[in-house]
Image (cartoon, rainbow, N blue to C red; front, side, top):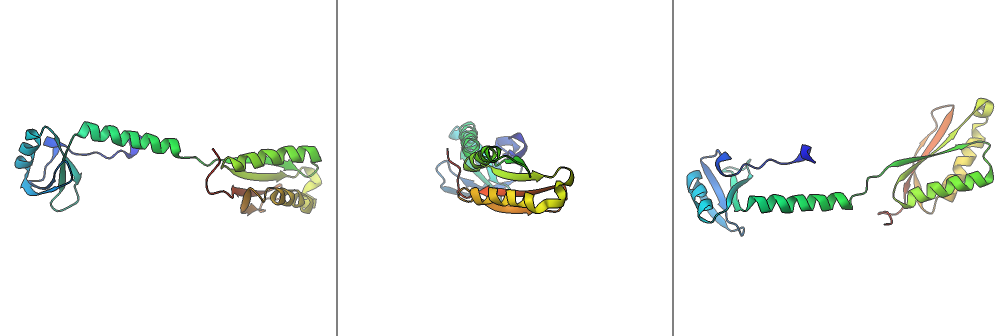
Length: 177
């Protein structure tokens, strides 16, 4: 991601007159003048990279900067491949839902939870169904009971008169591959 890339000052971009120099293998080389550090970098055919600009004096390291950036990009790509973006999937119900339709929606919700996504169970009331919110809540509670083996309730929203919702999160620490 270009937005969070760190900019390293290298070679002639360095401005501090004195630097704490670190060798290519991580060995400390002491505090040296900028020109001496640049001369050493040229001798070993490496780049002088400022790694801790906030230190006093700033810390610079001798390294192959191109190779460093390449390995850093590979690590970032691997981290992006490993991460799982949690999405909230919504499953809608009505008060007068047929048993088979209920089971189908329940299977979908269970599938979402096992993949590692959150599930928002929503019951919407049409017309006078809102007068019997207890029937709708019974449908949602049946869902929560049936999904109890794969998920836990994170949040209940009962503030709106036309719909009620429950957000469930997966029980497992990491999703199945």
